[in-house]
Length: 235
Image 1 (cartoon, one colour):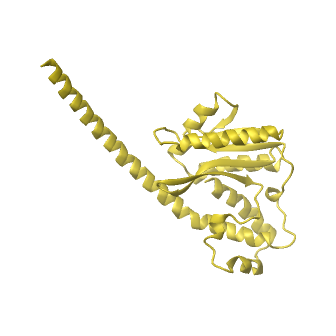
Image 2 (cartoon, helix red, strand yellow):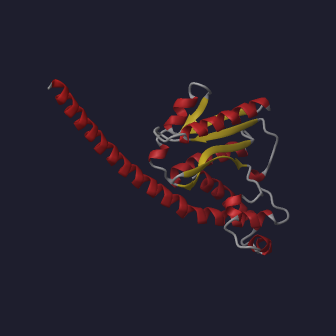
C-alpha cells in the first residue's frame, strides 16, 4: 500500500513538473518570437547603411580613422553567449570558437582584451582567461542606447590606438532551429561586401552605387555613417 502511495505521489510530481516546463516553453517561445521579429526588422536598416558605406568606399580619396588597418598588437574580442543553459550546444560552440581565436592570436603574439556578454560566457571564461569587461544584465533588456554606450567606448579606444581591431564571436541567426557560429571583425571596417548584404541587392545595384553624388559631402557623411554602422552591427 505504501508503494502505491509513493507511485501516486511520484505521478503527481511528474505532472506538476510537466505543467511548469510547459509554462517555461510558452514563455521561451514568446521571447524567441519577439527577438526574431526584432532581428528581422533591423536587418534592412543595417543593410542600407552598409550600402551607403559601400558606395563611399568606391569613391577616391576616402579616409576615416575607423577604416585604417594597422598591424595587430592588441585587439578586443567580444564573446556573445547566453545568460542560461538548457540550450544544447548554443553556448558550448561559442566558447570553443572563442578559445580557438584566443589560441591563434597568442601564437601571433597579439594581446587579446576579452569582453563577455551573457552570464554563461562570464562563468566559463573567468576561470580560464582574464575578463576585462562583463556586460552584466545586457541580454535581459537590450536597448540601442545601452549598446551605443558600449560602442562609443570601443570606438574611442580604437581612435586613440589603444586597440588595433575589434572582433566579435556570436551565433548568427538564420532561423529558430539554425544558427551559425560567426567570428567577425567589426573595426576597422572592411570594404568587402558581406555575403548577407550582397544577397539582398539586386543585380547591378552594387555597380550603380559608385555613381552616387553625396551631399553634404563624402567626409561629412563618413563621419556620421561609420560610427552608426558600427553601433548597428553591435546591436
